[in-house]
Image 1 (cartoon, helix red, strand yellow):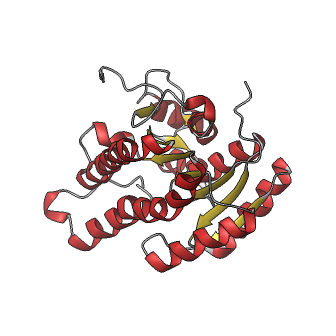
Image 2 (image 1 turned 135 degrees about the vertical axis):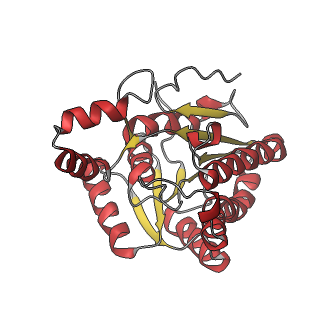
Length: 267
């Protein structure tokens, strides 16, 4: 299927690694021109070099912290200038890593940690959307995909659930407001996903428990109904479709990309 993304200009936040980087790769392979936004310049430049070599596509780096209004404004303006026009597609994936340690219990939740996570993942998404929407309005077309997470649908991490639910609520409000202008907004909820961090985690857990890496990975995959640890590239395939003109029938909706949560029914 041709996703009709050739020549579209995309901005992917959190694009230097993980799901963001995988999304950027998928968009480049579909012919889009892509700007990666992240905080750490060297990691970002390494990602740009890798993706350019892998895809042959037009990919650039813009350095910014999405908790800073002025940095976001400057980064979006720079991306638009270097890509040759207003941004058509925004994928918001910049967030504080969820981590693999046990989440804090109620008495351990601190205001600083809460505000940092919400400022990055929720208000950061707002900041980036604010900057790209005027150009999308002028073009009469745009796609915004917000990467949230399945903690929005389960307990176990209070801050994780709150920030992801907030992203889902933001998405629906944006979709209703912007849909009439030709701008569609969706949210994807990844579950446990294989990224660059997963291999070392599995190796360390295997070493500390005396088990094989295959056994550790099999146990991790038992959390979904396909018994397969979903890869960031598989999440990216779904996001790329949502970024395309072919996704016109989907707006304001949440798409789970975690391999199927057993026993849960969402309708």
